[in-house]
Length: 213
View 1 (tube, helix red, strand yellow):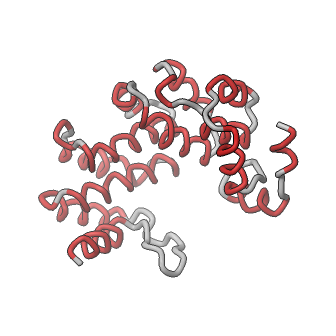
View 2: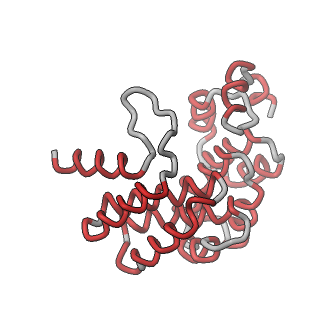
């Protein structure tokens, strides 16, 4: 914790706080610290228990993803209130855990929109890697009905799922593009030069173009 405190940078905190992340540690330096520590499950659990955002990010980097029980991960996702901790926990830990699909189904329609967004993130991975057990048309039905008015984090996760269906599944592409055009979710999202807009019709069209190229 002392080492993390020494890495605190007021400018980094200012930038991170604009995104809802209450820490000021440069992520490259955090990864360097994790590389030195290597995998330490017990230390990771103790770091997580501090509740400190930088400590929790470090915990995610040094833990053993497969070591967590289902209920532990359920509690951790509910405790992970900052976007970066939530994102890393889902992508670096839950996706590699044997309980991931069970949790995906449990979280998908959770009344907490942040928890539900984790269920959608796991579903989006399945859209690409294991779509055969998914009802893609049914997912599009839910997105069409609920995405426009969903809270920010859940809306973002649903939009990603919409785009991925359109990118990976040509038979559903026209409908995915139509839903994106009509709902106009993230249409005006500011996009840096050289980056692809998260507006689904632009995102789908660009990624399909790259695949064909």
